Amino acid sequence: MRSPTKDARVVSCSTCGRRNRLPRADSGIPRCGQCHQPLPWVTEAGDDDFSEVVEAARIPVLVDFWAPWCGPCRMVSPALEQIAAERAGRLKLVEVNVDEAPRLSERFTVRAIPTLAMIDQGRVVTRRSGAAPAPVLREWVDHALAA
Image (cartoon, one colour):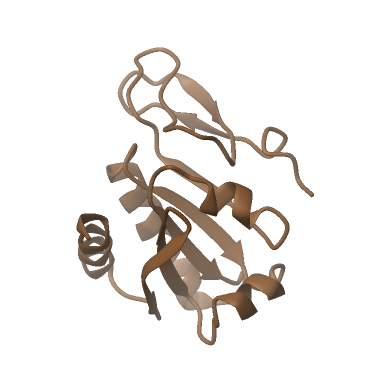
C-alpha cells in the first residue's frame, strides 16, 4: 500500500505562489501554508487506499475512472483539473486508473471510460460516463455540489 505522505503532490498557490505539499488523504481542506487560501486537491487512489483517500474525505470527491490508453480520458483530464482548481476547498479530484484498480472498476460497475462519480460522505451522489466538453462537465459538477 502506498503511503499518503510519500505520494504527496506539490501544488503552487494561485494567490501567493508558495509551493505546498498536499497529502493524498487528510481529514480537512488543504490550505496554503503562507496565505491560508484553499488549494486545489488532485490526487490518485487505487484498490488498496480508495476508502482512505475518497470515502473518508470531508468534502465532496469527484472520482475520475480512466485509463492511460484512453484518448477521451486524456482529453477530459485537463478540464477536470481546471474545475478542481476553480472549486478549491469545495471539491477533491481523485483519479483511478481502471487498469490498476480492477476491484474498484467492478465495485462501481465501470463499463465505459471515462466514468465520473461524485462521492460525498462515502456515497455516490451522481455519476456519468463518456467524455464531455469543459462547460458541460463544469455544469454537471456544480449541479452535483449543490445537491
